[in-house]
Image (cartoon, rainbow, N blue to C red; front, side):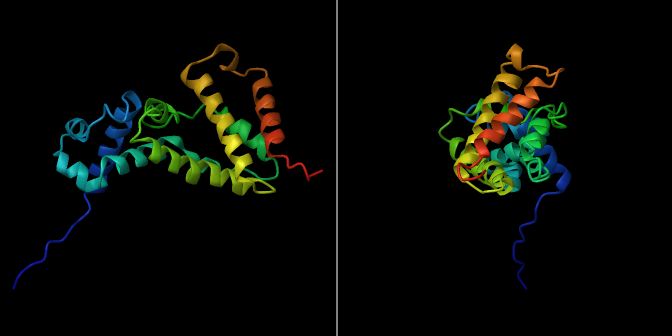
Length: 192
């Protein structure tokens, strides 16, 4: 009696270690500069195991982006005071993940990558803009995309480049400016 090959998923702990190593690599190096072999070496497993765990470098990259971006925090925000909640959440000090990687670290390293761009585009549309849109009193994808663009730009200037006027908000002025900007973007002309 013959036996059929069974494709088993790798143990969760090894898969998690691979994802952790990928997050750290993608946060330091661009998509092109990061190889599955490097990630496998970091974890101490064969590169075939990394491929079997995630299917492809593209899928591993997508999971790394998703794990660090913490976009699911958008869905937890209160809709009644969405602009204020979003501004407060954006400025929260605990945005660094357990990996020591900030939400934009991976994306910024690979923005110019033709291979990473489709993954980033899909993530931003599905995991950022769509949930933002669902929080709007009058859903409008263009306005949700504008809010995402505002926050991404602020995030790059504040957290990546560390532009002085945007770093630190002891007096609450930055939070108020972000709140007001988001409110202005999402206000529909036909809303009173």
